Structures are given as C-alpha cells and as structure tokens.
Length: 225
Image (cartoon, rainbow, N blue to C red; front, side, top):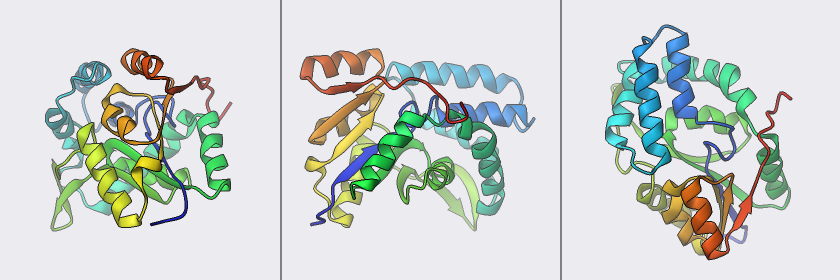
C-alpha cells in the first residue's frame, strides 16, 4: 500500500471555470470544423448534464464526431491549440493553488474527468499533473473511430475507473480526498474519506450541507487575471 495520500480532482467546473468538453465543441465551431448548428445541440447536452440526466452515449458520439478518422497526432494538434487558446484562461488560480499545496505536501494528485482522454491529457500536462483518467476513446489502425471504450468516466463509471487505478497504484480509496462540483460525481464522493464540494451545483450543495461535507466557494478568477 502506498504511504502517500491520494487527492483526486474533477476537472470541469472544479479546476476549470467552465466545461472542457462543452468548450471544445464551441472551439471547433469557431474554427469552422463544425457548423453553427452544433452550438444549440451542445447547449442542450450541457443542460442535461447539469441536472444529472445526460445521455452519455449520445453526447460522446456527438463530441467525438470531429475526430473520426484522425490520428493521435492530428488530434493532438487540435487539442494543444485548444488548451492554449481556450483552456488557459479558464484555469481557476485558487484551484491551481490547492493542487500545488497538495503536491508540496507529498500527495499524489489524480485528475478524474468524464471528458474524453484526448482532451484531458493535454490539460493535465498543462497543469503539471502526471496522473489522469478520462473516458477512453477507441482507435483502430491509429484512427479515431468516434466511439468510447466502456465504462465512461461519468458517475458509477468514474468510481469504477478510479477504484481500479487506485488498486493498481496501491492507494486506499477510502482514505482519499476528492474535489468536485457535480452531482454526477456522487458515487465517488461517497466512497472517499474526505469529499469536498467545489462551487457545487444545487443538488450537490444540498447533499453536502445535509451530510456535513466541506464546501469550497472558489472565486471565478481566471489565471490570466
């Protein structure tokens, strides 16, 4: 068993002031890779996510559509540009400081996001966090198929993936800390010893108050400010 403490962070609306998957679609529209009709579809999916009713299969097919047939290198060119132009100003400096403080204390940091790994990987690199989990994406002959590999990293799926990762790495998940904003992360929040709600959505805020979980109100100040 590892002696270090495991600290897990959700990504969207926790470390970031916004949602990376949602922002990626808008970025692709701005680059004329997707047409304007994608904006309304994207918003409808986001509305479902906020109330915990997202059809993940449909959303992932939608989110990965632009990557179909592209290689890892081709996708990396897009996602690296996306991180530089869109994600950089979305980073919450207060969340970033919390990450750095935990790192200084010798903790192992894990980013666990429902967003697909093609987006999570370059963001984790920018945040200087070596360990991350996202929804895995299928590639055949080094070409993206537009499909994800179950389980998704949403809800119970995130709990399953983090549990498997912790077991391999030698961490006791029941002793871990988890920061998240979303009711969708309730399964993992209930599993760890120290659940922390960061700018929680209304449903998670209500549960956090009822259960006496710590609630962090991190001001939405961007790293560029």
